[in-house]
Image (tube, rainbow, N blue to C red; front, side, top):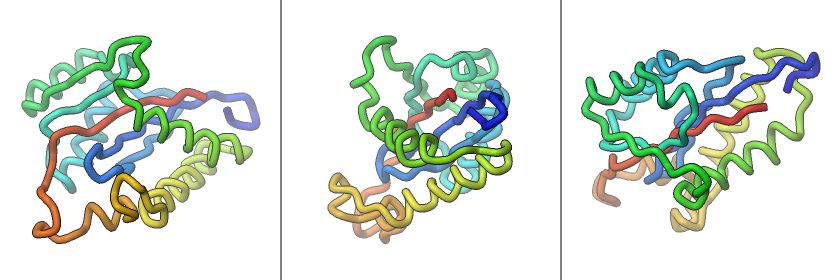
Length: 163
């Protein structure tokens, strides 16, 4: 929540393979059309995943998202309500984002919040080694040469946080 009481949402897009946070889209509301635009922007840089796993948020279950995934031939899997372990890594990521960023700052405006959250995302990707990546940061893991690992475009996670 902003200091003036306005609420916001954050759309987090995370690469399941590299653990990179590909986007943190911050706004007062995030429609299915907005999610589709953001996914297309990411795909311009990274290519389309074979599958996206998400919760059942309204922006992620809309007709716009159904059309997007059909047009781009991307499988979509919704986690079962009440089954948080189906996306355990994302729940952990969201907890870190809340504890280390959202709960630590007083956001004066949407612009201020976007700047702080983007700084946190960059730090997360560039400076945080992960044991699941053999001590590499998500960026180091993702940018290794193709000979070092198989390219895996199997899944991306999408989640929305409310504040």
